[in-house]
Length: 65
Image (tube, rainbow, N blue to C red; front, side):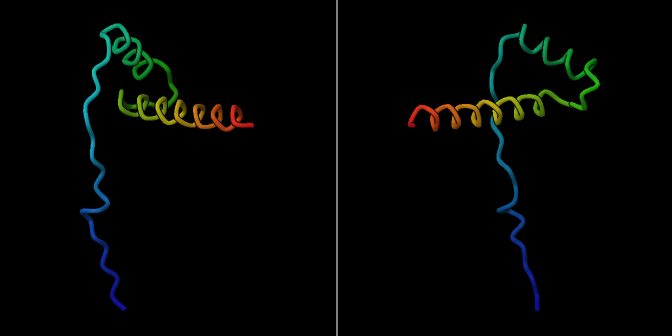
């Protein structure tokens, strides 16, 4: 049996987001000094956005009850 995986469908697409310079400085400080394992601005941004979306979904669920 031959398994063929379409690599093109597995490629993530990215876009740019503009942030205020002060926020970028704070994020860079976390990446550099925190020891939390973040290696890039992108990692922090993705985690923060995922958490926000999860919290928002939970809020909406509670609000419906």
